[in-house]
Image (tube, rainbow, N blue to C red; front, side):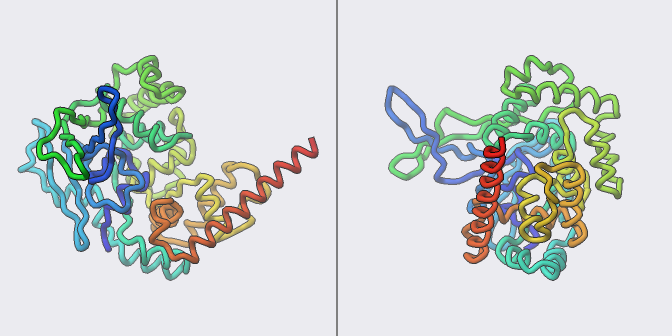
Length: 371
């Protein structure tokens, strides 16, 4: 109950993990014939709640994280030549990454006492933690995530790593034959790259980033890189971990190019120890309107700074470690978790969503008639 990677690594906190499983098939064409290729780790971890193993680069290592019914296991698949794994306390390293010093079960119990709906979610989605990411990686990753979808974010960041990071290792790919795996790996492999440091990003240009598919975000990446270097680089971001006011950290981060309040709160929550930061988007606003205060929008048509703060306060006033509790509620809305939720809860969610869509459609029609 203290850690379930299936609920932690697959829900959009980070974008560096790939799933390892037996039924992902990449359609390839060879001599005008379809071939089913299975790769050991070819796809984003997003939405893979039902799987049990994930591979990803952290710092100067590549780890495999495997979930069992009783515990979580890890393997070191790669370590940088500059990294002496014998001198790394992996227990301390993973405790830091998964924030295991924070006992999760008492938080689940506290949240459940304050929210009947959350208590039902907590019973079926145990072990969801907020990980402590490298803040530089988190900052640039969430700039790429803005107004974007998971496949495109994953593709952007893959190109970003490949262009400016260092190649760490190739993962083998095997052929799927008659629903069984070939014994020998194919020559085809998937390369895994480190996330570039600020130093490695110094040579990047807006033109290069646009050619990689980052579009308008290319300008934000370059401007934020330069600002961050001027502010003191990674050490500046790490200093924000000492700040006790998540709103103050949000104000610091929105100084950077391409970072609005939601992205700032994502970076604060997922890398800067701001446990009460609440990244608010339309989905989180829907949770707040449906479950806590149907008047929270107060007639507003968008998430103004005032409405953003009102929504955040609904969670912060209700829960300790509010950002963690908010994440559990958010995850329960994802398609990949619907099958584990109580049927009545899913029906209520669908009913509310239909009513909300009907309300918006009516408003749109009324506006059209008025025009």
